[in-house]
Image (cartoon, rainbow, N blue to C red; front, side, top):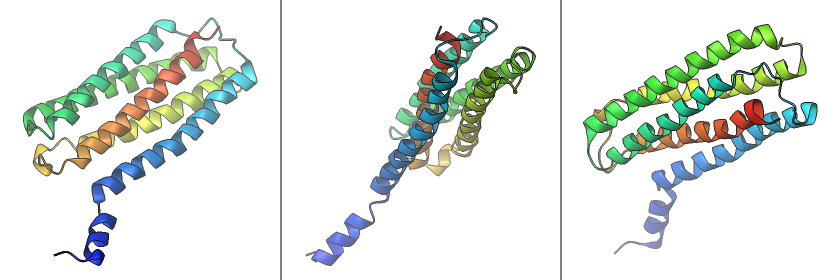
Length: 186
């Protein structure tokens, strides 16, 4: 029969629970970071968005990220089911869509340098917000690449896939708030 000390030790060393709590605490801190950047836009500019903003590009970038959330979810669902091939190809599809987003963001910056110099309020907000988001997206791509090897995970132990997909969803949700802030508010 297990003693109270052994039961306590098992509860303290629940790695999956600790990992899940840790990622949610991390997300909480990131909400404040993105919230500060987004609220700065409204404080400095109100609801005015320049006419030169490329609405079509913003919509394409948003579509890429939303589709990538679906492929990321497919990877997360495939891992505990033992569908290694589906998990791997879903992660690869997510990476490709993420790289497409980063390429589009690079085009956005190229156009923005012409219309919104970094010395203007909108330029500063645009480059800071999209740069912060691109950094998070790049980090997610690196983590996705590290987790694409299906042999590293089992049906019982797949936190690496679950954690990175949760992070990817967070980055996508951040964009859902950034997109209307930079492109749609008039």
